[in-house]
Length: 359
Ligand code: NAD
Ligand code: IPM
Ligand code: MN
Image (cartoon, rainbow, N blue to C red; front, side, top):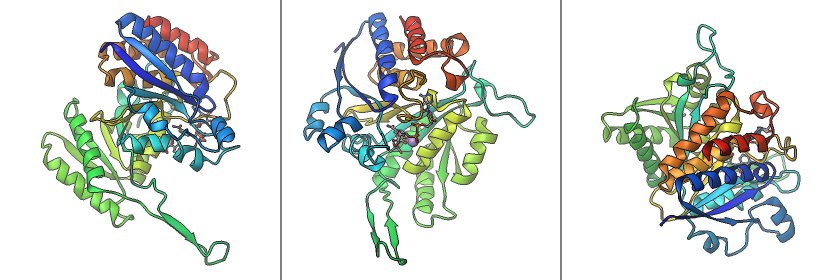
């Protein structure tokens, strides 16, 4: 005990620029709160590694990582040289599946000091308390599959089948997690993203599974909303939401839309959890490698830093988590801001400002 063993996996693009800021803040937290960090830097799980080796990860990747306490992950993807489905199925999606990280928890929160693009019904800017919810995304099955195929390729009869897979185990465990989470919150409200009007087999079944789970949580209310109107309400009535539970693809979409509604996706963290701790969990920004801004030291490091705080919380360092979130709040309220927040600060300046407050 006392030593947290963590792999740092920066990946590609701005993943490599925000990772040092995340590590800087973790280091400050470890000094202040008296736990030790043992960081294992990993250079594979990147497109550079793929170009040299023809594979995203070494054959023994799983044994190299399986005994660590957590994986701290930047972003993977460099579509100019490696097709995204190759790089992502060869790394991030493999981690999520093989380490059974079936919960993807993605907090969405409007901070003081961050300009919000949304207004309320009277045209007034949204206030921080108006947007504060959690997206709970199913993370190991659903619409993300390689099941299917293309027939009559190259002809005008070309036919594409892409299957989705929803298991009772996989669906019930993410629903249960969402209800348990909501039960511990003030509003005790779950919103299910559905599409049972159009997707005629799987989504009516999701609705029924959610109703069955709700029956076990009489104190938690359940609201089933079709994904189309749900996206509209993220924009128009974000104060309605508390815990939003969704399939893999719907959750992916909602977890970029939500943070965009709070000013920038550069803030949004995520926790890919194996709640039973049979395998290491993975903590990463919601955003990707951002090839359009990489190499300029202007990426917002907050998503990476906040993800580090979620990691410490999961590993039992609640006070360190709280101190990091407070430092983020303070810097967003009055500290240096990167260009996505309307400022001129660099990635490094913003990371240093947060680390100083944590120290
Ligand atoms: P992206 O998230 O990389 O970028 C989308 C937009 O947001 C870009 O304009 C980018 O500049 C901006 N942005 C993202 N993060 C930012 C930050 N921290 N600060 C400021 N601006 C930021 O999404 P994309 O362009 O669709 O994908 C680029 C690559 O990343 C692709 O290869 C994609 O597959 C991959 N990707 C990886 C992950 C991951 O590893 N978890 C997540 C999403 C996308
Ligand atoms: C995310 C990303 C990934 C996903 C991609 C890169 C495969 O967008 O973590 O949200 O869709 O899960
Ligand atoms: Mn995404």
